[in-house]
Image 1 (cartoon, rainbow over the protein chains, first blue to last red):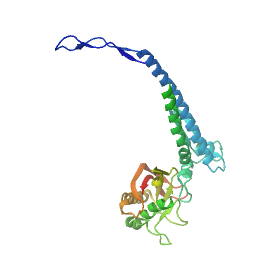
Image 2: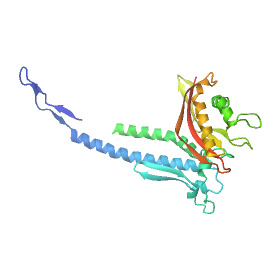
Image 3: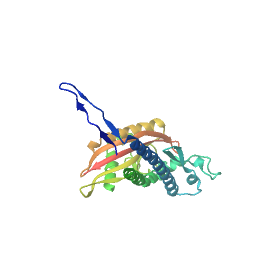
Image 4: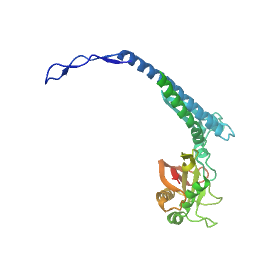
Amino acid sequence: MTRIVGMPKQSGIGSGLTGTVRVIGVPALLAKLRGVQVYSRLELGKLDMAIALHVAERARNNINSITGNLASGTKAKKLGSYTWEVTSSSLDGTVADKNSKEYAGFVENGTSNMEARYYMRDAWVATRPEVQVGLMRIAKLIEAI
Amino acid sequence: MKELLDIVYHGLRDDIIVRSVIGLDKDKEVKVYDSIAKTNVIAPFVTISLLPGAQMVHVYGDPSVAHTFSYQISSWGKSRREAVEVADVIDEALNNYADWVTSPYEIRKILLQGLPAIVPDRDTTWMQVQAFYDFFIAR
């Protein structure tokens, strides 16, 4: 805990206040804040990864798979410390014979003859509550430090 | 929920500008369809698809006071220019939601999400303008 010691005193009538004021406990507080920073970075990084992997897995499960090409082409990729990307591309699929054309967008948004499937949006909507729960958990853990 | 979706559906179908630009199909219905067009319908037409994530807002224990949901509204045309013209007309119609019959609900807000995308069709030479709108409707 930080404390302020010493009181300013007035040196004479009509003059300003002078005196020494010292704040005790700042190094310990800074060390604690650095610890919180490191801890929150780790936890946020883990949460980002978990959310991205869940979205990718749910998207793969949402696909009405025939060849498995689009499902295998739905992946999560880390872009930075707190940034993940979930992409879906038939050209990234592992079924080599079938992945000569990109059709992920047609499955997601539909065509003139086919309804939209929204497999990616569904996956995000289903995973969104986990983001809120995860962030609240991290906030409570930080508060308890 | 269906009555909320019908508000948007009928609001677009009853708009006179939309009717005049898009026209009628062989069943004499305005070519605004739910999710997918009827078989053998020729562009221009419009399809409306409900996106996942519709939510109800609870107020004082009443679970159906307000609703938020999102639609993908696809404007189809035989060419890029036609698709864009249809999309403009639909956007204009959505801005005129005050003229729609919505009772007992009231449309509070219709917002365009991001920018529409112009994409070719997989099965024909037609083009579609995909626009995503958020709707906020309350009682």
